[in-house]
Image (cartoon, rainbow, N blue to C red; front, side):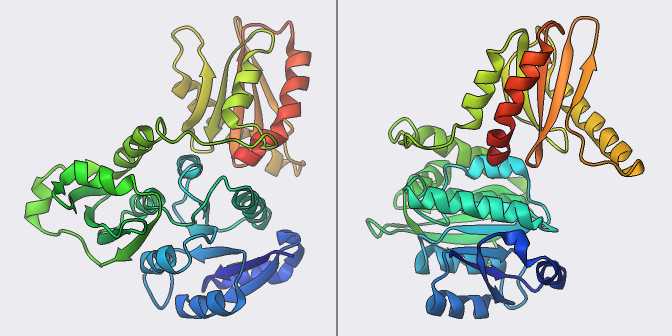
Length: 353
């Protein structure tokens, strides 16, 4: 049985877990109520995975995660945050074995993410817990002002990053400064991160535009990937990109979209003429919220899907994990086969989102 260490002072989560311990499946749960207690358990009990609240009572959650980066560098972990998003998890896919989950936490969803992370760690697809890129995405998510010291474990080289309001205002690495220095730090595969409190403050930093953290990390990923293509095990589940392309090959399907509950198009394949896929995604999410309202008002079970027919197109929607799958078909002539093939892929897409 895999051991799951949960670190939080949130009594609501503990009450939910006490009321439905079976919601986490086969995991053995270890409890810590603050960062200090968690560090003791990490050293004594060696859990297989850590679930940590970004808001701790005895230390800064980022300081705690930084400590883990050099004391427990291979530990898979899930961070609980009130501002987590599905899009962030998509971006974290290739940045180590770290994910985020939105509070209040859905326990079956937590168990699903934990199981997937442990599978990835077991087959070597994700070798370390907190990578620098993942840490910066969390800083961006929480809009955290800080200074970071970063050490490359392979060479011993060091560098620093000054961050404020989700932007980079300074970086140094040897003779490099600014963006080139930051990209060099992000190219290091295994790092130790030291969280050194507040970053730049005052009018001087406010006058500078800075560099968007999310864009910086994604640029580093684009630069690294051509040199280090990731190996995909033959028994790995299909990616969301592959599944959307398969859906695009179904009769009359013109576009396939995965949409977050807030209407943001996370991933898409295909086009619908000059149509704005972002607008289609946002509209589908609004309609899904309306369907959820009908389900609640009539005390029905969860909606199995939604179909909207127009003069020259049909839109089909299903819930997949925490997201929405929308297919845009040119006509209704092959809807039965499209529905059947789409439903076969819904469980696999739900694992991705």
